Image (cartoon, rainbow, N blue to C red; front, side, top):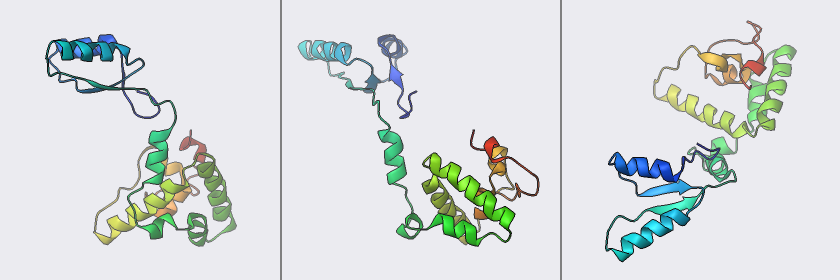
Length: 166
């Protein structure tokens, strides 16, 4: 599996799939030439078992597509998430933590994720869907706490944001 969530198959993987009677119709491979040879053979012998193939996508188009096509209303896409989170704080300690976390989220290109989580939490609240108390490393994020993703105050329990954004 590469960074674009593509499973890259080798010729051996494809052959094992055929031998296991798996229906192989579309694959991502390092080299399309063996697939092209197979498809020519199918054409020559009038076998209707062609395989569509493409080479591995080396850029981050999958990630870019996800980041640009979030399924949420424009009001959330246009939300100033920094200002929203700062408005949720009461003390200087909280503001400092929010700015620290936001810089880490921004460094990783994840501010859109916070906007989506705001949308998701709002939709859950509007539809009486219960969210959990908190689980795993996400409880180390004070921003997620402020958004309502979990109910663990990471400042109160002195949880380090680096545990979440490793």
